[in-house]
Length: 369
Ligand SMILES: NC(=O)c1ccc[n+]([C@@H]2O[C@H](COP(=O)([O-])OP(=O)(O)OC[C@H]3O[C@@H](n4cnc5c(N)ncnc54)[C@H](O)[C@@H]3O)[C@@H](O)[C@H]2O)c1
Image (cartoon, rainbow, N blue to C red; front, top):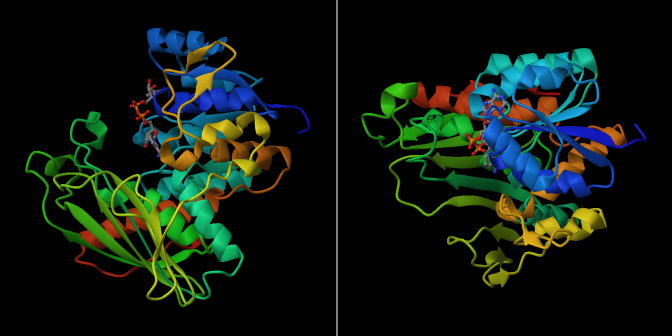
């Protein structure tokens, strides 16, 4: 494809944040938006000047002008919509997680094989400035031998839309599984997870999941490495936290304990605080400013009210760029369908393991190369 990629965004809560990025990306055309309520659809469409609007996802898929859909609907729709889009001949970028069952992940991986289309799971931590910083150090050999990785994602979800209530913590684990596998571009082969504590009685029956915290060990395939990831969603008092720690023989990186404090690099007994730079230089100039806080629309002389700015570690422009360049350059994005399935199935199997008292479970073959 030498022309611009016509992108349609589905789901305009979080999804709306990507509209101005695709609008400015030199190889993308922000073609259409889709969400069910007409009033909200029009409000977003008018604010950003997107003319093509759909309240029905299936109608959107019939539009031959749409090359790629970027799905940001609620979790339980991710697999169904990704599969429908692939079957309609559209490339797919989908927010996390890829799906909620192993079978759905298998079906998406198969659909990508059958169609030759591109699928990318838009995992934000994999393109956060912290991850890009550690990855740069790893690629340069500065960490020495990587010995262990650890990540966490702790969030209090009380008051969020109903589909979140009682969700097993590991069913939304990609923010911590993604970076521990992504640094060395490894695959998970085995998981063993323990559940701990108990959420409130009214939340438990929604998914028959009692645990406040789930913590999982991951054994990497063809590697001596292991990692540990921790998740909590309800009844656990902690500030929002996404974290990623890497222990190397020469250098280790630890994510700060408190948001907005500087992270820590250890080289032995002399730890130092480090300012993690933005990685805007990796992006086309037109979208580089989206890595930093606050987005101001100078064309229209107004703040973009739908945009949270540089949330999620400044990852949004990197995600959009990775997806668009994979289509333009015809190369696999990271993570592609199989890699996304491996990352997502760690969480799904981890919860199964926790429900079985920590039994070690092997990842399905279709998630491994
Ligand atoms: N860091 C991250 O990666 C990150 C951050 C926030 C949200 N998310 C993901 O984004 C998704 C959406 O989150 P949100 O907070 O915006 O949720 P939300 O419930 O506020 O918004 C969902 C959007 O999807 C639309 N929608 C629902 N059903 C639809 C359908 N059948 N067809 C078309 N549109 C439909 C809704 O109208 C709404 O615009 C979730 O899956 C969440 O996991 C990821």
